[in-house]
Length: 478
Ligand code: FAD
Ligand code: NAD
Image (cartoon, rainbow, N blue to C red):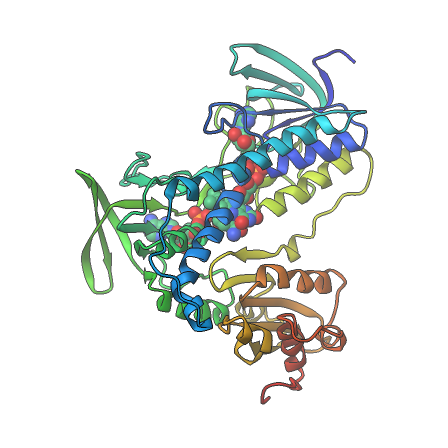
């Protein structure tokens, strides 16, 4: 095959694109991947938003800040005191940068690692042309045209910008800015009490900033089950995260080094002065300069590439996966779409179960869920029953000094099939996997209730919540 001819070309090396490339190469397809992301050193950094300015760096800072917060808020309960604890910001941020480099470099190694069929990597922007050609404008000034039977678009997403609070990278920042501050801001304002607002707001709150979050909607965490959102909101309030619901922001002016924010809620108009303003109001699919004339690829009214349930665009040999298409903007959703498309191209079966994609919010307590909420069951007229169990009645959680939160299981009222599992509490980012497996195997709450769970573990809360569906929890009154 000529050097510029491939079986598969992937545009974008975020988790959707790079996983797709690795799977395609494993399946023996000659694969190229074009990516434009530049790391802090200006060099190519594979892994997209997730590895560079998303999942991994945010979890690194969440962990560092949890350690710091624990010195004053957890250790004293254990009878341990630490005086004059200090933070070295260069090490705090540097640790995160090292982790990012390890994993972005890891993707480059994985591309080369399949010795029999390595993935060819291009550093530049890719543009889809008619007839499954991809024009690559390299950052070294080169320009070339590649051709493949199949092209997969995996160009991801970017933060939504508010017209009255444009990112300046200094005072008004996005996720990348909030992951790279050189000092703890005295006052941090956040627009949007969504996943990024809560996670990055928590990081800087734990490090000592006063954090005020302005959320336009009247309900807190509307996508989560209401019982879980309520339990989490109670804990965030205790931690001092100042969350204002129903807050409509109309202005954000940078005056010297201060951002003056104007917002209105049911009590009228308010002013808020902060040193940094993080705008985290959602992300939009990124397709700028991507589609040449006459490709036939369609974009919906939210700028997302239109695809069917198999991520096929409707154009022969053109597919799209990850954040640039419909569905939740989650790394694991994009990864599974990448695997599915590679397998379909290779003539195998490929499938993603969009009904059981877990969500995790890495706050303290953590929040996690899979499947339907109670409100969704009500709205859809699905007959259901619920059971729940608090971490406060679990020996392990109390021994860890992390008793906040609960697990709630929703099962079909007639068949007992698990419809949804919702969690708020310690390590629920890991516990949710049990629920996902049970749901994928079409399990009933009775199945979870009959499985032996080790004692004392946090997983006993899942067991007890499942028992509670049938009003037979053993360590609480039913
Ligand atoms: P991206 O990761 O956005 O990658 C797209 C890549 O394509 C980029 O490298 C981009 O430069 C490149 N590209 C775009 N256009 C072109 C072009 N024309 N030519 C060449 N290259 C191009 N999700 C989770 O599941 N768990 C988490 O804990 C989590 N935490 C997050 C924390 C933050 C702060 C943020 C911002 C996001 C987080 N996410 C998390 C979401 C997750 O990062 C995204 O869902 C995921 O990165 C999407 O993967 P993707 O491959 O579709 O796109
Ligand atoms: P989000 O959709 O989670 O939250 C945005 C919030 O901003 C919403 O609550 C929305 O009501 C609010 N909002 C919108 N416009 C507003 C306005 N003008 N004023 C005040 N509030 C406003 O979006 P995000 O937090 O920016 O994160 C983007 C996406 O990235 C997430 O939806 C998720 O898919 C992904 N992500 C995932 C994780 C994770 O899995 N742990 C972590 C971070 C990001």
